[in-house]
Image 1: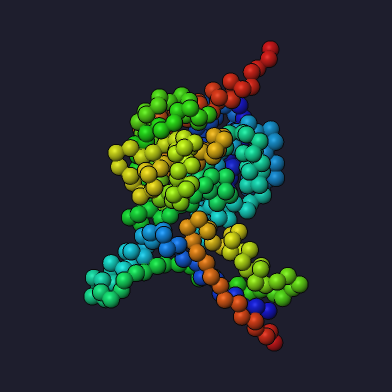
Image 2: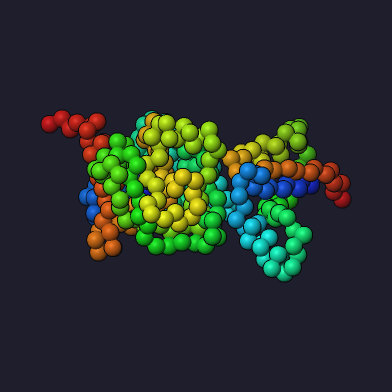
Length: 84
Length: 228
């Protein structure tokens, strides 16, 4: 079994209005050190071992459904877990 | 002319669309559930607004993999008129039938009010009943209508006259170049955020949207001459 963590954020070139609003709020709380806030999505997938390559599978899922690569970037971490 | 009104779980402008076609335009319309795997026999495909699949993940992302969406893609490739309004537009973007993507509105608010649109191209099967440059009033109702595409795509949209409607006077959502509606390259797929089906009778505040549907019928009749 694999535990996969997928992180999706808006691409650098795309303005993130939610992130901007949160940054402004942090500034008004005097956290002026904050220079950028990007809001994204976090997904956890549990994937069963099969004869298909897990890295390839996750990449495909990200490209086809989980992220919209027109405006979003993604990265993922794959961890093998031993099930009891 | 017979229209299919596609219904996903969470669509909520399907009845308005049906009413516009049936009662105001006077053409045939049928609801088509998202599980259907054929759109044979329909001359035009309408994807209504709403919140398909609760807008989970991204607006339109899950609907893109519905049975019926594969058929919508086939119909588009066959040259049938395909109109996506609001969430329908988002589904067309996710399905890759139209270029670009939607971001949250720049002020993060759901906006529901009439908007002035300018007809940027009246030589499409969706706009031939309008004057070039005509300004019309059509309601908008969305939280994610902030259209985005990269510079290369924008250049192509302009070159091929694919920008059909733009917001006039004020841009409500921050969309690139004030874009409110675009077609695909061959001109038979239109996606727009404003709701023409909510502007088909002056009792509703505006009848400016009716000409869009009349345009589709006019263009269809032109290419399907009825033989006696």
